Length: 306
Image (cartoon, rainbow, N blue to C red; front, top):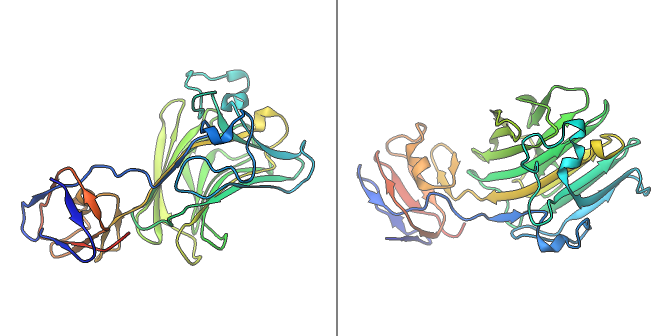
């Protein structure tokens, strides 16, 4: 049986053992992939393209007007694998049809960037996912992405620096991810655990090796509201091309008012050891289907439109 929460309607969950309805995973708030028809014909990626849903159009920029020094395209992400090829035949970060991903290239000290906004800024509990596939990065080059506020200030970055051994997660301080260089792509999942803290999981696509790190966002005001992709001087040739694909964003809709921790669903909020008896869990307005088990005396209240 679904439960509707609207305005300040309260869900009776003050008694241990109450069972109610709730989904395990909400639908994405935003989603896009390079195989979207908005990026046809193949190879085409330009300012104003707006595939998927839940985000504004792309703004593509370069620091040089010379197209041999920096630019953007849609293409096959396996081209940066070098002699090793696509060793596990998974297409790296490509999606079908067309084996496509968003590509950025930059050399001679230049930078190619791509930015778009989220129509709904992040709240605690929000989850962001993107697939990133870099090739070689020369010393002095950096490739990656940033989650930013509406004023274009970085709050969190994930990147690889030429000459380094590991990917870096950079909030208020740079943290080695524990995940080593690969030409065959990484899946990056960022969870906003509170309004100012994050958890980042990076997983290599070629062998499944991964690690999770956590920390605080940079001390810039406002919520995450934008995404920026960048290739800063990775180097010349297809072996240094940078690719991204498979963007998904789930907006947090459940908040423990006592701890400030956010969640996608009610059940994880209840099960979290940080949630103690007597805490209040606020749930954004909506209809929730599925099953939850309330195992501790907490109050669950509707918080109005999310």
